[in-house]
Image 1 (cartoon, helix red, strand yellow):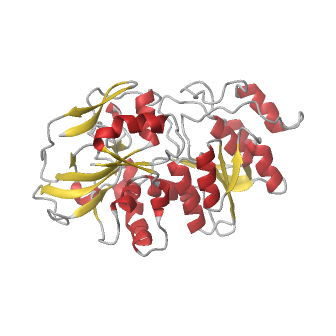
Image 2 (tube, rainbow, N blue to C red):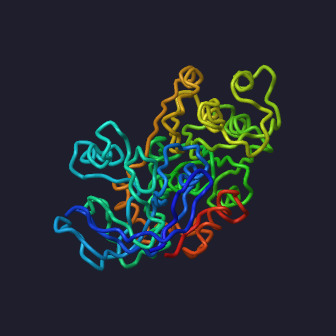
Image 3 (tube, rainbow, N blue to C red):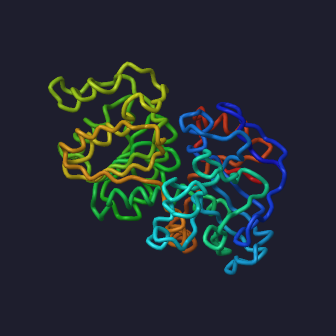
Length: 398
């Protein structure tokens, strides 16, 4: 079968690989009909998330049809159409029972302290072969498959696999309440769903911070107030637009690959924020330079901490590697912020969000901007990685 395979940093290929087989009675084999390319995949290809094992099939978003089942998968039938939650869980440990599926004690073969297990990730996450393939083995399938209602299309379902739950998780972590002001940093696919989720939670105003025109335009179409960080200092602009207060809730939806801004319009010379920024964040970096692990706090993090009102809440759902040990804790502490973060517990949210989609209360498909065949997957990666105009979310037809 064909699959997108990691061979090294900057080196991915569409290879012919053996078809997966059942390895346990709790496994299933799913024939993929749709997969997708995620910003998290780019972390692996760029090398900002280290530890990828050569030969790993990439991808952690999938929709398909069940072809084979182990004897201990008792809630799914061959022929069922399913969505695959991106993170892998056992469903019976204390963490899973409490809804913390991303912290499952049993799914990651490296042990209880190993962290989240997911498809197509670094060696430390399993590794489990991913879902940018014609077929995939799904471990612990009774929990890690969700049967789709007929009313939900593949385009809708692929967004339930990862990014809609992750955006919703971010809004929930940020403690969005009716009437709250919210700032989302990063308007890629996850950021767009954080905006949509904040709307579903009845946020009063939503600010969207990015510099890519089509991403800002999509945020604007959702009703968010767009701020281009290469035109306005986002912290100063958000404070200005909120009467000097800042927002109740901030969401970092970027992660380790956040861009630098140009120096841009300077804040007031005596601004505490400007002084802090000058001492930590290198202002002169060109647009597009990536923050590498260990190079200092993400600019998105620093902006978010500056833009959130005193005693507000910051949610971090952008991906950072374990090797990234920097965080502007002093700035956050002195503003009495609550900071919450983590990997999304996808299996917790999929049933609720699937019903929202099935009922017609929200249609997520406007986020899918490109449909590509499996044979074009490598070219699609290149376009997505370089943020070509219109390339916001790529669905891969298998």
